[in-house]
Length: 57
Image 1 (cartoon, rainbow, N blue to C red):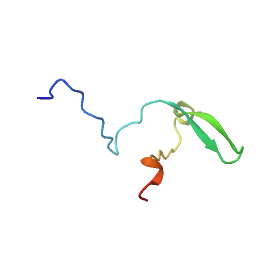
Image 2 (spheres, one colour):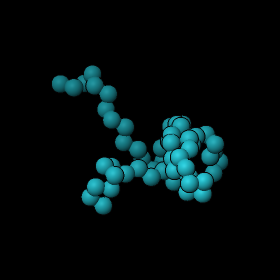
Image 3 (cartoon, rainbow, N blue to C red):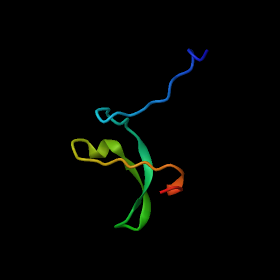
Image 4 (cartoon, rainbow, N blue to C red):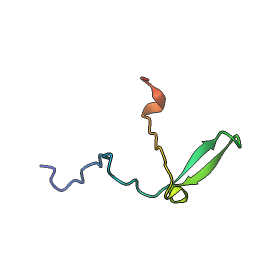
């Protein structure tokens, strides 16, 4: 029925994150800045995603 639709990506712990650029709040500089995942290559990074602004957290 839906064979031609692309399935959503469900990340696993061993999957590499795709490279991206995004806006983030810099708590030291107290401003929003662009971050680039490429600049963190070979470093430990925690990517934290939250749905609906912590609506039910």
